[in-house]
Amino acid sequence: MNNFKFPKILTKTGQKEKKWLKESERKYKIIFDISPEVIVILDKQGKLLDINERLYDWLGYKKQEILGKNLLNLPFLTKQNKIKMIGKFVQRMIGKKILPYDMEFIHKKGGIRIGRIVGTPITNKEGKIIGDLLIINDVTKIKRAEIKAKELDQMKDELISVTSHELRAPLTAIKGYISMILDGDFGPVSSKIKSQLRYVYFSNEKLIKFVADMLSVSRMEQGRIEFKIKTVYLSKIIKSAIEELEKEAQARNLYLVLVKDDPKLKVLADPDKLKEVLINLINNGIKFTDWGGIKIVIEKKLDNKVKMAVVHITDTGTGIKKEEIPLLFQKFQQLGKILSRRPGGTGLGLYITKQLVEKMNGKIWVESKVRKGSTFSFSLPMK
Image 1 (cartoon, one colour):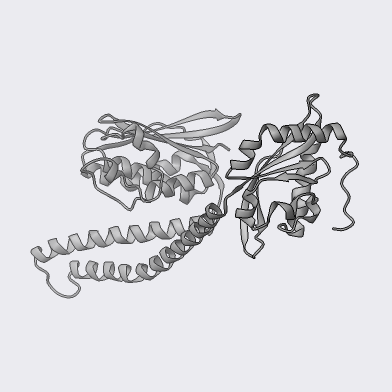
Image 2 (cartoon, one colour):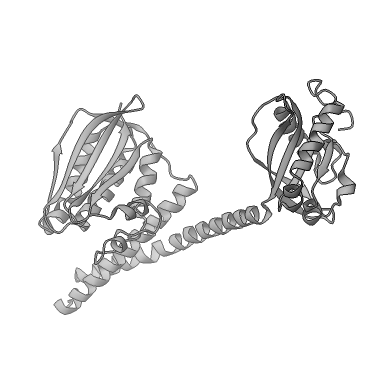
């Protein structure tokens, strides 16, 4: 560091330029003194001409300890951060715009502070760059809160993952035993008991679905879900999803049809993940529709000159208020809570669906009108 020299482009500061810097300082003296941020004035050689008293409150250094020092000799910067700050300073001195950036500072009594630095060149009347003005805002608490939040989020994800794994085995066992009891494997069961056991069975199914969704979210956020992208016929997978949910729609006296087909249309997608997306969206349509039904349309469109296949899933259900639509694709947001007196779910289905679509290089969106129904649409790249 002792052998470091500023670039030749940063020539010596003349007397006129020093006078201009002093005039600028006097002009903004009041703001300079009362500012809650640290304000630093440098000449174009990186020498500190002035700094406000906020430095003492923040880093414990008095003004007299710092004045006249070069950026290379600042005691509150590590070697690495001195190089970083000098690099940013040099770029500003040659007219380049530098975005605000964060840096660690060392307190005189020990400990780290984090400052967000905004720098702007000081120019004379002719517009010539003669120095630099730095405003340093203390973001230590914000940064520490962000780190803490990230750690808590990671702990939460780990807890969810472990809990979900531990719950999966006993829930599956419960399902198996209830099924055996209902089938009479342990002897005759009265119709009254069977009726109650079916409630237990379906409640257990909901828990199994919830655990599966929790595991999916955990794996997805940790990047542990593998996508096998290949060329697939979109229509074929849509028809497979319809076949799987057809009985459920019929049980509610709803139609479920593919009204605009394109059998030859191929997309790039993971077939299993694509089917999961379709089942989630169709199932939501069935759940929130009392009359009419669900129709599916396939179309082609250009998105930034990229050929995309678009699937529209339209229901005649209750619809969603405009202000509540942004909540749909967030974690733990249930359609049942947004739409009054509707069956709830895990609050993860649409979040998972969105993640799956985006991982396959697609987009998902929704249009809806209250009491008229909703159209959930997603796009995927065509082959």
